Length: 283
Length: 156
Image (tube, rainbow over all chains, first blue to last red):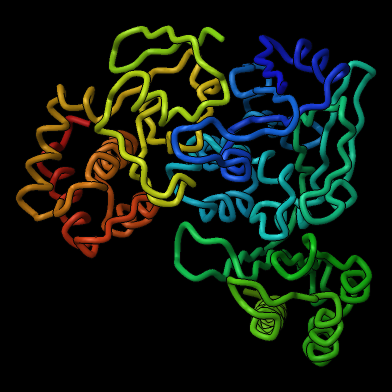
C-alpha cells in the first residue's frame, strides 16, 4: 500500500523522509506524466509520496552574501518574474514547456528529475549552482555538477529534501543561450548551449560553456575553459578550430526520436564557433 | 483524505485519493465537464483551469496540490464580463470550430490578459503555445485574443 503524506511544514516533511522512502512531488508536472495511468484513474506510484507544494517556507527567492537562493517550491513563473534571478537563467526558463506548465512546475523539480534534456540544468551547470539538501540530521551543500549523476539519477539520500538551489554571484560581460528544438515554444530540446565570457584589456578573463541534450547529463569542461582563460583575444581567434575540436570530444550525443547524433554534434559545434566569434568580436 | 479548496467562488471539501489528477476531480467528482481531456500529459492545454488566476494543466496537477487554492473553470468564468468579451471575440473572428480546445483557449487567454492586458501578437503566440487547436490554424484564435484585449481595455 502506497502512503501519501501532505506535511504542514518543512520540519514535518523531513520527519516523514527520515522514516519513509518517498517520491517527492513539488509541482508534479514530470512525475504525473511518468506515473500516468489509464484516463480516470490516479497515477500509479510504486512507493510512498510526499507532497510539498503547499509548504510556504519552501517558496521564494532571496539574496545574501552566498548568492541568489531559489527555494525548492518556487515555480518557473516566479523565477521568470523575479528581479533577483540571474538573467541567463530567466532566458532558459522562458523556453521551458509552456506558460500553463510554468505556472506550477518548479525550477528545482527540473533539476531533480535530471533529464538529459532538462533545460535549466544546463544553466545551473554554467552558473556553478549549489544544491542545498536538508534532513533531520542536518544539511549539506553539493555542487550541481556532482549532484547530477546520470539519466534521472541524483545524489539525494532517501531522507533528504532539496530545499534550495543557490546561484553564486558571477560577473561577466556577455552571455548566450541557445535551445534548438522542433518548434519555438513548448519543445523538448535537441541541443542546448549556455555560455558566458569576460574580456579585460585584450585578455579573455572569463570563459564558460555548458551543453545539454548531448550526453547522459549536462556537460561542461573546466579543463578547456582553463586553457582559454588568460589567452589574448587574438590567440583565441587563431586557435578557434583547435578548441572546437576539443569541445567536439566532450559532446557525445545519441540518436533518439527527437534528433540524431550527427545533427546534434554539428549544431553544437556551430554554436561553439559562433560563441567564440562573439567573444573575440567583443560584442 | 479530506481535501479543501475553492472552486468557482465556493468552498469545496472532498474525500478523495490525494494523488488523483485534478482533471478527474473537476470532471468526475464536481461534474464540471467544460474542462476537457486531450493528451493527458500537459501538451495540449484542453484541460487548463485557473489556479489563483493563472492557467494550469489540470491533468498534471495532483489534487493534493490543490489544497487551499482558488480555482475557476470555464463554468465559473462564464459569469464574468471578461468571458463575454472573449466569447464574442472568438465568435467574430472564427476562433472556435469543433470547440474541443475552446474552454482551454478561453482560460489561457484570460490568464494571459489578466497579467498582460496589452499583449503583442508574438506574446499571444508564445503565451498560448501550450494550447493546441487542430481546426483553426491558430490565426483566428490569435486575432480573437488581440481583439478581446482591445475591446476589454482596462477591464482585465
